[in-house]
Image 1 (cartoon, one colour):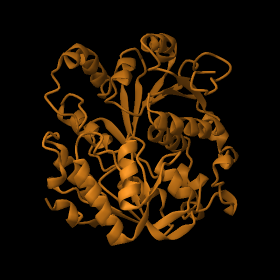
Image 2 (spheres, rainbow, N blue to C red; image 1 turned 60 degrees about the vertical axis):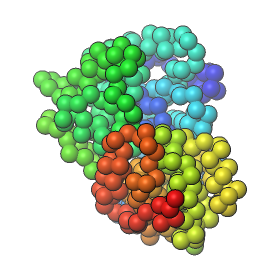
Image 3 (cartoon, one colour; image 1 turned 135 degrees about the vertical axis):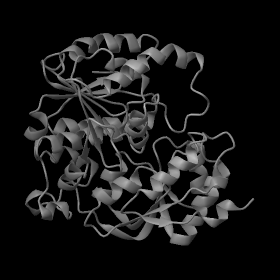
Image 4 (cartoon, one colour; image 1 turned 90 degrees about the horizontal axis):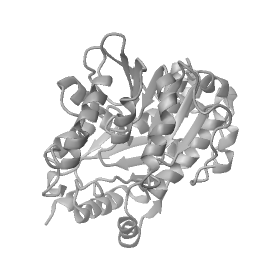
Length: 400
């Protein structure tokens, strides 16, 4: 039993030679590993399932206590020798969502290994030491965040020739772009030159990981994504249609209202707090929204203001929003700022009648010290959302 209370897998300490080892640090990454495993195993819903039903016309359980019952296709996902390693972060809300996603993965027959990878000064060395053997034996490595220094370090220890990158949200778009242009792997919202002392020390590891993520010789690289990406030569892109989610859950019950989706743009230093709150208030008034689905990284102080000053019911999802929306109840319209969900929710909610709308981020909302790439990247997220209705910036947020 780990300190987090998650049960460690029983049996062998690691995967057998040639097996698949996946590393995740967020609930969305783990969800997309499940989607990848389902697609890799040949799973694909029938037309009636894609339209909103579980196999055999039986709706999948929607209550939290029913998660363990949705075990259809467990042999399919678990049969490939997949072990998911959770490199647990510090954030309590993220850890909570990861625990729930780990339950779903185990219900699908997948081995989950929970690592308190950041649980103290000696935790990284202990984690890396314990994973060295499994990394050497694995024939395929699946990762959710190619920008993660932890993951980059682990990539230097593997001999696997098959590498798969599953979506970590819109960051996948930036990863593919940087891989194609030969740029260093740097998150889009990071400010500065990336040449600080820590970056310089870690540069050789990052460069080695980048080479591992570049196809060549016998090394094969796949990107499993629901994002619009243009892969560099040699990289295979497989579309993530959220077939596992649509097969396992839903259809949702729709409410008459509108739901807003929060983002962490304030917390990542991109958008000014006051401008963001003004925009949320305007969207709520304009669209008659009553609920605000919080991003797991949003601060308690900001969410308190959303509830107290704007009057929205703040919902802290215990699972990624794609699953929450699919289980329902969910509003007939979902409004979001530029984020991953404007690409993923239309796929997860296909055939349900829910409309997803995206509100542009006005340049006036950006903080003065935001990354120079921020506006262009956010505009690209909005402009490439094929199945989301585009809204103009909330007017009240552009006033001084």
